[in-house]
Every structure is written in C-alpha cells, then in structure tokens.
Image (cartoon, rainbow, N blue to C red; front, side):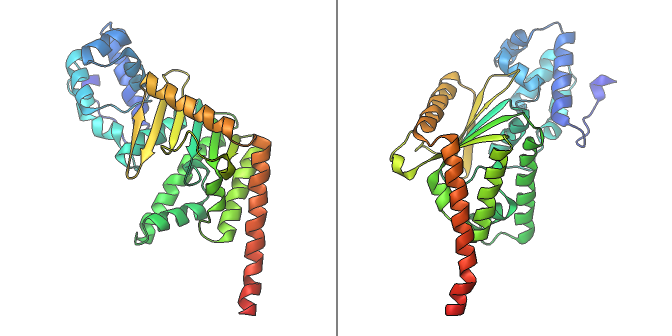
Length: 287
C-alpha cells in the first residue's frame, strides 16, 4: 500500500521523495501553486521539491502529510530524504551541483572544491584542521572527489570559475602539489570542459570582497546562489539576491584576465612550481 511505503536510503531517495510528492499532489487535483499556497511556500518551491532541487524541511513535510492525506509518509521518510555526508549548510549545495545546468564559482581564497586534486585538498584540510584523524581527512577527500563527477558528463553542467590570482600564488602543500593542481585545471580547460578566468592582483579592489559565491541555474527550477562564511553558508533563491550576485560575478569577470590569458598565467605558474621543486634537492645538497 502506498500510504505505508518507506523510502530505501540505498536508492535515490530525493528523487523518490519528490516523485511521491508530485504523484500525491496530482492525485489531489492541486497545481504546484495551489499546494504551495496551502503550505505557505511558493509554487516554484514545490516544483523544486518535486524535481529534487531542494530538500524538504520538517514543517513542510508535516504540512504535505496533512494537506495530501499522506498518512505520515513525508514526515516518516524525511530523514532518509535529507540524509547527506556533508555538513547541513552545504548538503543542498552538493546535490544542486549535480542537477545544475550552469555553475559559476568565485574563488577568492582557494581552488573551488570541484576542481581540487586530492593532494591539494589534503593540504587545505590540514591547514584548517591540523589535528583531524587521518581517516576523517581521507573521508573528506573522498567526498570532495565525488563532487568532481559532475565533469564526467562532457557538456553539463556548464562550469565557469573566476579565481583570484592569490589562489594561484599561495602555495598549498609542496610545489609539486601546486603544479599538479594547476595542471589539472589547465587540463580541464584544454578539454573545453570548463572556463576559468584569473582576477589579477594588479586589478586592486574588486566586487567580490564579501567572499565565496556560487551561482547555479537549472532547466526546470529558479536559479540559486550560495554564499559562504567561516563555518557556515547560505543558499538563497531570492531574486534580488541572485541578481546582485550575478552582477558581482559579471564585474569580477570584467576585471579578470581573458580565458586565454588566464590559462597562460596558470600554466606559467605551474612551470614555476615545477622549477622550484626541481631546485629543492640542489638546495639540500648545498646546505
């Protein structure tokens, strides 16, 4: 019986959850706007729940059960539908990356997560959490690596990053780690899989001083923006916020080097790190 069904966490629970919401809404003869009005959310938000773009909140699950006569289905399966190995404030972002049509990252402090190599990621984690158990570090690296699977598709999502030159120049790990990280980014550019621009230090003050932003658009849902601060972050779909963030990104892109010039800078920096690494044994011998 459908009213006693429980989601299997080994399946795509978000997709099953959303499909069940859509099925029960349609069976009740309600549009997304009508259900949204009854739940005190927008019809667009209902649509995002149905296609798995947003995670169900506890109060919405309770309302859906009551309005759709779901006999507790949405509340009962809420934990499975929301389950994620990522921190609560970032779990939705990771899932949205896999659903997005376009992603635009502004990276003022480190290489964007989806572009990080394992060794670069390890250096970043160790700088932030030097006493973390090795098993925890390796688990975090595995999660980060899993996010990069979005590039397995040759075309979607369309990915664009603006990276501060400081990120290129600030060494994470050894010179070899940095060289490999920059070569990895250059490789994705050469494969025509991503677009990268570098905001030069010489550009001076810029529009992105507030910190990391990630803009994502979808074929069947409104765009969202993620803004990150220390130990926290916010995912927002307010149109004014999205528009302001899009303008910020455009201003950053306008102040940055062209994609071709950015690639040249990245590859030149990789060469410099490789030269520095080759020089290290000689330095030790001289000492």
